[in-house]
Length: 277
Image (cartoon, rainbow, N blue to C red; front, side):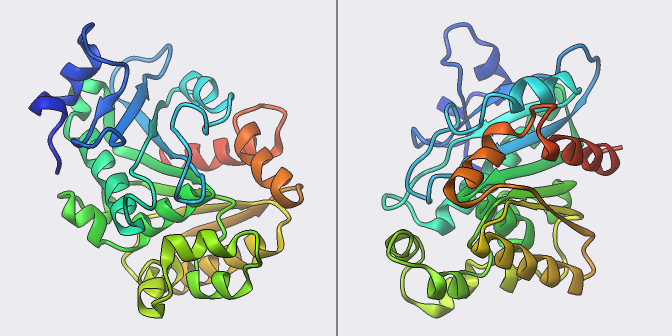
């Protein structure tokens, strides 16, 4: 597990008035996370860890989360962490997945001081972040390298991802997304399969998955492939779809999740209550 900033424990970094608002889980400037505690609760609380999207090459924990998630989930009694990770082309997708796992491990390590219940942690990610959390939840090597097992997370919520089976997604990609996928995953089919949650979703996996998507053709197809692979492995998996077309719908589900008036919010709240009971 990478050390915290200057070797200091995460809790000390978070609480020191002289430190920046981020918590470092590694030495690179992108290896940071923000942690908001649950409001109105006492004792160790469950934790949601959010991983932003951005085509593996852009995005930031402070502006790619949506306005509703943090106040909604902290108000529901969950701590909420938002994670940055190194970006393509300066890092590989393999390194990005390892960053996500290392962020989980860093929070688990200091869970007692940070007020987190280490037995009740959920990974959530949107778009490229959905791919990364699905990969970490199906391929044990990333959490293993961080000193953890797949049971370190109680569940995974990928939101409108479209690269769960990388080769098929790349084959169907047009001019708009094709270069992004090739930059991230290259042309080696063996590497593409290794980075595909569908190909990795043989037991064991993280204990439970909730797949969310809007009405995008590739998003629907990819979510169905991952659902089928997880269920073949005996992993409890639910898939729920919501209105929304194209890029507008893709952005809306991330932007509005946590808004009580948005239909996916109640679905996620119910699933979290069951998985983290």
